[in-house]
Structures are given as C-alpha cells and as structure tokens.
Amino acid sequence: MRKWWQERVVYQIYPRSFQDTNGDGVGDIPGIIMRLPELKELGVGILWLSPIYKSPGVDNGYDISDYRDIDPLFGTMADMERLLAEAEKLDIRIIMDLVINHTSDQHEWFQKSRDQDSRYRDYYIWKPGRRNGKPPNNWTAFFMGSVWEYDQKSGEYYLHLFHRQQPDLNYDNPLVIAEVKDIMRFWLDKGVAGFRLDVINIIYKASFANGKPSLIIRGLEHYKSQEGNHQILRELRREILDKYDSFTVGETVMVDLQEAKELCDRERGELDMLFYFDHLEVDRRIARYIPKRFRAAKLLQVLTKWQQGLEWNAVYLENHDQPRIVSHYGDDQLHWEMSAKMLALMQFTLGGTIFLYQGQEIGMTNFDFTDMKQLNDIESHNINTLMKRLLLPAKLRWYWIRTASRDNARTPMQWSGAKGAGFSTASTWLGINKNHSDINHQEQLSRPDSIHSFYRKLIAFREQNDTLKYGSFTPLYARKNVIAYRRALADESYTVILNFSPVPRLTPFSGTVVLANTEEKTFAGKLAAYGAVMLIETNETVKYKR
Ligand code: ISL
Ligand code: CA
Image (cartoon, rainbow, N blue to C red; front, top):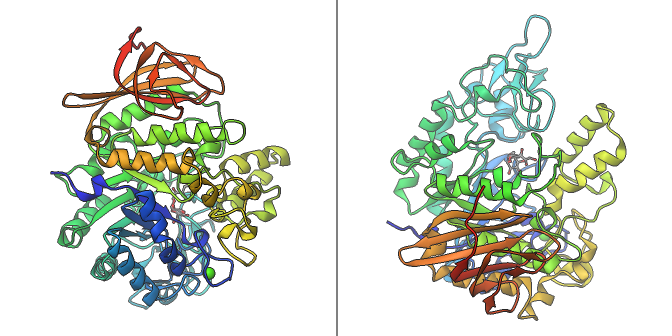
C-alpha cells in the first residue's frame, strides 16, 4: 500500500539560516511561517526542521538541553504551534529533527547525572579510567579526539561520540527509552508528522572494549547497527509511532546495504527510510574531507546498488552537513545553471522520497569565505586543528575545508539581491555569500527558465508520475562521465541521460524528450555540457557494457 510520505517532496529547513524576522541576524520560526506560501508554490508537501529545541548551540541545536521547549533564538512554543496550524492550512506536514543519541551537557539530566547518587546517573555512560591513567578505552569521536571526557565532579569519564558537550545517553537504561517515548508522544500530540532521527544506528553501545585500529573512527564496531539498536527502534515504532499517522527517516552513520535493508524492512518495523552517504562520497576518501577524482561511472554504480537494493529510498543530494551539490558534482561557475538543472533532473528521476535542502532549488553554491575565522562549524574547526597538528600545509588544509566544510550549506538563504539577501537586516550569524546579487530567489521567480522554475516543473511532473516514484531502476550506460539509466513501471519506460562533463558528448541514444535542461523536443544523441534529458521512446544503438 502506498503512503502519503512516498508521494510528497520534503524540504529541509535549517532554521538559523532560513529567514530572520526580528532583526537579530538569525532565522526564526516566524520567518518559516512567512515563507510558507513560497514553499507551497514550489510544490513542497513536507517540511523537515533542523533542531529548534532549547540548546546552547554548540553544534547548532544538535545539542538539546530541553526537548519540550523552543530555543528563544527561534521563537516560542506559541510560534511553533502557529507554524503547525498555518502549514496544515496549506496541507504541508512537518517533521522534527530528533537527536537522541546524545543531549547537551547543559541538559538537566546530564547536570544531575554528574552526581554519583542521582537517579540520573545511569542516563549517561560513566566509566572509571584505566589503571595507567588513560581513559576507559581507545575509541575516537566523530569530531576528533577521544570519546571520553573526565569530569572532576564525578571522578569518572563520560562518553561522547560527538563533541564533549554532547554526552551520549545510555540505552541500556529503560528509563532513557521511556523518556524518549514521552518526548515523541509530546510532539506527535502537537501534530508533527514524524521525525528525522539523528545518527540513529549508533545509539546502542553493545560493548566498551577497545576498538580495532582504524584511520578515522575507532570503536565503531562496538556500537554501529547493533541488535540492541534494532530492538529499540522496533519498540519505539510499535509503542509510539504506529499509533500516529507518522513516518521516520533515520540518519544512519556508515551504514552498509545489508544493515540498511534490516533497518528499513517493512516486516521488522524499524525505520521507514534512511539517509546513507555513499552517493555523496564518490569523490571522497575514507574521511569525507579528503577529495579524490569524481567519476560518473562510480556514481552510477552506487546509485544502482541503493536503488535496486532498497525497497524505498530517501533521495537527497544536499543537507546541512554537506557541500552544495552544484559546487560538488556540478560546476558553480561557467556551467552553474545547466549543471544545477542536470543534478535536479537526476534527483527527480530516482525512486523514493525526494528531500530538498533550502537553497538547492535556486542553485546556491558553497561559501565564498577566505579565512577559517569566517567559519562557525565546530567540526571544521576541530578538523583544521587536527590537520595542523599533523603538520599539513595551510594551503592544503584550506582547500580541504573549503570543499567539504558543513558551513558550505549553512550560509543564509539568498532570497534577494539586496543587502542582507532578504534574509536579515542585521549582521548575520554566518556570512552571506556575495553571489546573492546574482543567485537569489527573487531573480529566479522572475524567469521561466530558472533553476527554481525547473524544480517546480520537476516536482509537479513527479507528483503525477508513478514510474519515477515507484518504478524499477536499470543502469544503461557509463562512458566519459556520461551516464544513463532506465526507470520503468508497467508499460511506461524512461531513459535518463546525464552529462557530468563540461564539454558536449555524443551518446548512443536518441528519442523523444519529456524532461531536459535544454529546449529540444527530440534528442539526436548529442548532449550539451552538463546536459540532461529524460526520453520516452528511446532508440539505443549500443548496449551497455560495464
Ligand atoms: O557530517 C558529517 C561528516 O562531516 C558526519 O560525520 C555527521 O557528523 C554525521 O553524519 C552525524 O550528523 C548528525 O549528527 C551530528 C550533527 O552535528 C549533524 O549536524 C547531524 O546531521 C551530531 O548530532
Ligand atoms: Ca531572528
């Protein structure tokens, strides 16, 4: 049976950078309300809000200090209720970002937990150090360094897989699971339609033995996708989520296809879909920060694996942790518009639920910062410090940060070409890209051939089209950074051909165009630089060979 969340396009909002209404340089909930009509116009059916809960903001809200309150930076609970009501009027549903692997160290639970005798002690993972004065084990954190932080007050170490101000909850404690259920109920009762579950496959730590040697994350094998983790997800699903008309999308760290299949299996009843990263790491080495050459053939291979492997995909090219897709797999200079549209066409011709990230629909690019001081992201700063310690030259460090920093996606939304980009009248929490004079929402609304118009067209087309949402996926061709695949359902079949290179390419296909980033109605085989076409009734002169 088909579900409503398989039919709608999701739009991720990073509230801090979306729309400021009170002139403090930070986006807020009234700003989201103000922009609802534009989102409706685009064709969006679901909003995912990055965290707006009370938080000290060490990791921009992914460190929650009160799950039942709104951070004053973003507004009030009344604003949030108004947002839910206004969105409902437009038939837009809202999912929240739920971060339950860890809390903020400012959360009341954690503060109380520092007392050995508190009932909250076992809400977190406390361990004595090893006899040699070393921390409890050798695991390393996602944001660099040890996962253990010594707490003077307790005389013990606590575990944090991310920043030291993000202590991990203890999922061996049923009280913690009970708290999570309450929090979920609280928001579902307010009318949210589900959750994006942050790092949800690493919440259960099965053992605390030393990790095996690893270049990046040491210890992963003791907590990634453990049976205990699966059990918790099933329990949350059965006891809470199934009681509401809701869905979940899990963000899953370093997940492989087998794990993903288990996590999303309908019968098992854990997650509805999940975010994996493979398709964005085609040009990355082990650590996301180390680049390597992009090859479209490799991308096709990865897409094929996941499109064919999973029953239902979450299809995304950007989020608040990733560089902008046009700067990443496209060309944000000479071929900006063509490559942004080519990537849009690729995304909308993949099966699953589409997730757009704010600004993607106007082809926003990576930041134009020139100095580390302009960055806010703790991950970028930590990685820079680590690379410095490894004596990597400044130029290389900056090149890596510039291509991979999470702040690339976090610069304020470019609504107009005016000072402040229509985002804010004040000086903003993170710099605005200077290219907002050319790349902005207002300019694109005025043009029927803009990237924004193209997205609108794609959303509308897909809404009416089951083949793109539910059809099979077959790879057809990969040569010289041109790839092609087929999507088919019943007696409908489409061929999608994409050129990832900055020069025109000849392909063995021709046929009738349904969607394209150029004007032609029939395709004779030659794709423009970053050209993209979707054909119905295709002639193919050569069969695909790997
Ligand atoms: O972004 C990453 C690589 O640079 C990942 O390692 C990322 O930290 C990981 O995917 C988890 O991300 C999520 O949890 C983090 C938070 O900082 C991210 O913003 C969030 O998306 C901790 O809550
Ligand atoms: Ca504000």
